[in-house]
Image (cartoon, rainbow, N blue to C red; front, side, top):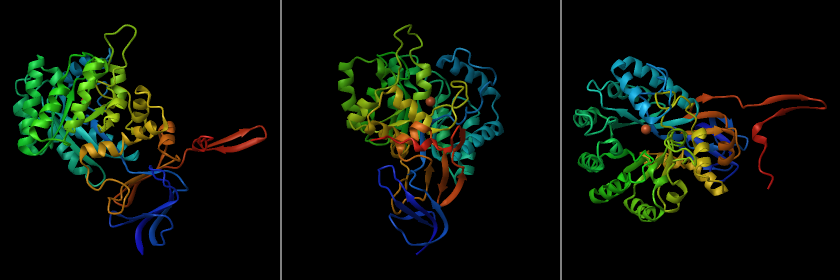
Length: 429
Ligand code: FE2
C-alpha cells in the first residue's frame, strides 16, 4: 500500500493507543495498529494524542483584532462593547476587516482550529463585514472551514433596516440565520423575532444560531420560544442557542421543565465561557453570579453543548488567543466539570460537539473521513486541556500545514541536569 502520510503510534481521544493513521488523496484510509505502507511522509506520534481538529462554533470574525479602535472598552461590559462597536462600524472598510480576519485565521490554523462559525453583523447598510467575510471564506477554504451567520447585532426589529439587511446577506451567500431576541425592545418583540428568524431558516433550508438570553435576567426565556419554533417548523438538529446565560439565574423548577423541551426539540447549546465569566453578574455585588449556562445539566439531558471562543481582542474582550484548549479549560472550571468523564467531555465541547452543531461533513478519525487532525504534546484529552498542549503538527487533507517543536526546558540543577517535558507529569494511578 502507498499512502501520502502515515502517522504512527498515536493515542486517540477515545483512549485507543498504539494506532497508526494512513492518509491518501486527502482522506483517512485506515486507522489501526501496525499499518505497513510506503508513505510520502511519516510522523511518529510517539504515543501522543492525535485529535480531530478544534472547532469554534461561536466567533465574531468581523470584529476580531480591532482592540483599541476607536478606543478601549474601559468598563468591560457588554453594553459598552456594543456601543463601542457602533462607533467603529462606520469606520470599517472591506480591506481592513479582511486583513484582520485573515490574520486571525492564520493564528487559528496554527493551533489546529480548522472550522469556525462566525457571526457577521448585518446592521450596517453597506454590509461591509458580509462582503469582507464572504471573500475571506473563499480565500481560507483550502485550510479552514468558515461558516457565516447573518447577525442583526442591533436587533432585528430595534434596528430599522436589520431585517432587510439580513435577507440581503442570506441572498449574498451567508448560510446561517442569526438573531438577538433579548436585545429587542420588549419580550414580545424578542419572541416575535425568534419566530420570524426560524421561519426564514425553514423557508430557505438553513440553520439557525441565535445569541439567546445573554443576560442575568431569569425571566429572559427566549430559549423556550426557540425550542418551540424549532419543533413547530421541523428544524430539529439545525438550531443552536448561543450563550443562554439567563438559565444560570432561572428558577430550578422552571429549568426542570425547560431542559427536556430543549432536548426534545434537538436544539443545541453554545456556551462562551471566557467572555461570559467577564460579562455576567456585573450588576451583582456579592455573591456574584458566574453566569455560565447549565452545561452539565444539559449534557445529562443529552443536549449537544459546545464551548465557543466568541471574541479575541475586540470591543467586548481584550484577551484571547485562538486557543480552543483555553476555552475548554475555562468552560470546565466555571461549570465545575471535574470528573474524568466530564473533563473528557469538555474536550469534546471544542471538537466533536461543535462539529455536530456546524454539520461538518467528513469530520472525525475514521476511515473515509477527511485527513484533518492535530498532533498534541499530551497523552490524552485531559492532559491536553490541563497543559494547553503544544500543537506539534496540524494536518489538513493529509498535508502538514503547521508544525511546532515540542515545549522542552533544559534544567541545570545541582546533580540533576535534565530536560523537562511538561507532558511527562501523567496521573500516578
Ligand atoms: Fe457572540
